[in-house]
Image (tube, rainbow, N blue to C red; front, side):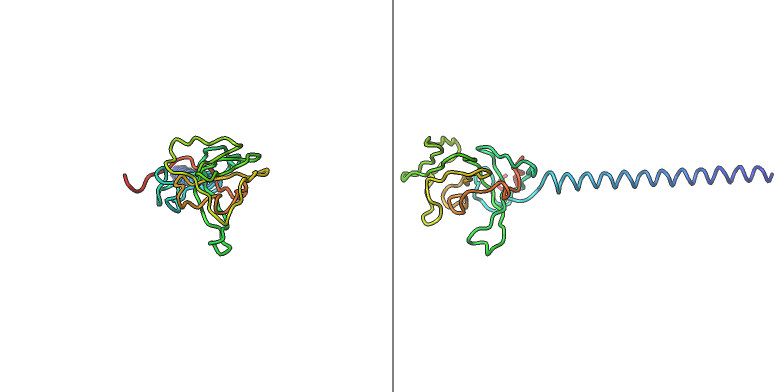
Length: 187
């Protein structure tokens, strides 16, 4: 009888230890999942809202933007998020969304009749519906971009805050390349 109780007690202890090991394994898996999600969404991918309507109609103010943080080698026509100190920002970085139109080594000019010229050739932009005018008193033209610089323009060319206002953008100021837009308005 004494031996049966001991065997019964041993089985209960083994069952309890097995339950504790399962619980520990579950907690470790949850912690690993949270660590992976943190790394993914705070180091590799970002999610933010469009700060303004400068990229309208493609991106409207308030739309959610999913962006890739690790890509610093931007190409022409990439839509990027950038953190830039501007004359209006009182020394703090503001978030901007804009399209890359030229990169390192390119020469950008804006003609008196509102044409965008990159390396002497007019840019043909199928989805831009207005002329590109200079902002007087800000950027001097033509501008040749140095190593690690790009020139960005808002799709809404009239009144958009872009390189015509704050000059070329360095790679260090690029927060990431927009992957997708999640429309929150005008559905």
